[in-house]
Image 1 (cartoon, rainbow, N blue to C red):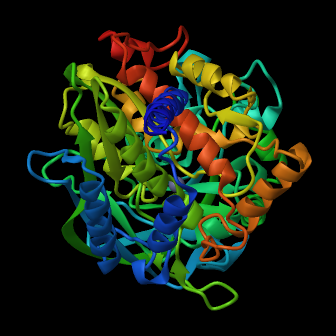
Image 2 (cartoon, rainbow, N blue to C red; image 1 turned 180 degrees about the horizontal axis):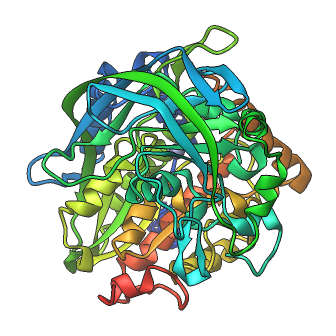
Amino acid sequence: MIQFNKWLLIASLFLLVACDQKNHTADDGTAIFSADSFKEHVSVLASDSFMGRKPFTAGETITINYLEQQLKSAGLEPGNGTSYFQEVPMVNIQATAAPTMQVNTPKGNFSLKGYDDYAIWTDKVDAHISLDKTEVVFAGYGVVAPEYNWNDYAGLDVKGKVVLVMVNDPGFWAGDTTLFKGKEMTYYGRWTYKFEEAARQGAKGCLIIHNTAAASYPFKVQQAGHNSSRLQLDNRGKDMKNCDVIGWIPEPIANKLFAAAGFDSTLLVKANKPGFKAVPLNIGLSTTMDVKTTYDKSHNVIAKITGSKHPDEVIIYSAHWDHFGIGRPDAKGDSIYNGAYDNASGTAGLLEIARAFKAIKPERTVMILLVTSEEQGLLGSKYYAENPLYPVDKTVANINIDELNRFTKTKDMVIVGEGQSELEDYLKEEVEKTGGYISPNPHPEAGHYYRSDHFNFAKAGIPALYINPGIDVVGKGKEYGKQQEDDYTKNNYHQPSDEYDAKTWTVEGAMNDMKILFRVGKRLAFSETWPKWKQGSEFKAIREGKK
Ligand SMILES: [Zn+2]
């Protein structure tokens, strides 16, 4: 009996070991991902006590301390010497605009109401800003694009004037695939570009005509920026070009201005034609703004797992931790912009990815970079890209997460700005291994490739990958998924209602997508290859040192 028992014991031990080995090889490092832990992070980050995670506020302090503590307890090393933080010097610009704007026209004068009829702000730090019967010029798209043979400012002097321009680019509006990139928005279509170009041209002001389809979100998103404070990188001592007044007016108000100037809305259509000439409207705008500035430092949170074989080669996972803080109350009286989906979800995702990489001991260094002030114009990632803590030419790739699918798993995943780099091929293979597929971007006109932090890494030449959740919801299909997405854009995007809801957040989608993004990074972390930009990418020449 004793003999027998001994044999049984040995046999069962052997079986146990064999089973354990089998489980071990079946796990590619993703078994550590936990829906409960992900949900816990989101619920904490998006709770009212985090006050909407606005940089410079108590909401920043509580957020970055939480992130530091989580990364530390996951066993990650500090990413900036002995610190988990990179200081980002910034300025808070609080502009208070006069309640109205006077419009002087040859046919008589009238006034427009701030917030209702226009939303304005400034990137200038002067204490007092004013328009005084400042002349208005309609400058079409406000685009100078030599590669598309397009120049809305040709032969035009807008110094000291206000330019009125259209959002998006001619390819979108004309529905012509030969103009620009057709429906796919180019950087020339982004509002940030419009303001930058107007400033380069010496304009005193730039107002963008809002149209929901072309902007891809409603005017209320812009209204939220009126009379609110905004952040900029602290550029003291640098020669910066900024307009005094920048902002948006809704299309009906633009048409009112055109009518007062003796034009009608067909003027907008004329701007689609190559060779369009800007039109002085012969009207003047007057208003004032008082500006208060505060200089302070915000923080990127940075942690790493040093590579065992190539410690100097770095893979950067990024996500922005910030959102809008406490602002204008919505119809329900809620004034806390919790930003659960945008981007507590991506931040929580990186905390999961951090734990997973720690466990598999990567050969290259994996960096977790949680950046500040994305919502204020991608400022934290811009600061990192301009002041990198690890050499850019030793930075293998960037994988950015901004919003992880909080609901049911989807069969598809969307690559934003498809055709940019070889990272997309890695992603495609990993998605296909799970039985899924890559679907085309349903909103190419929205210019998403220029709307999150990976764009700053791309501009520095680092191959960057950014995905959007898919819409082909398992068991429910594409129509359902699209409806869900449109509903979010219409009702919750950048609104206090972007909240965590334990009942509806099933997070299977997030779990699936973050595992795939982990596998893409894992391939890089155990490889010696360097992913490249593809032919035709505007960032290829930068990586190759030719730009
Ligand atoms: Zn975001």
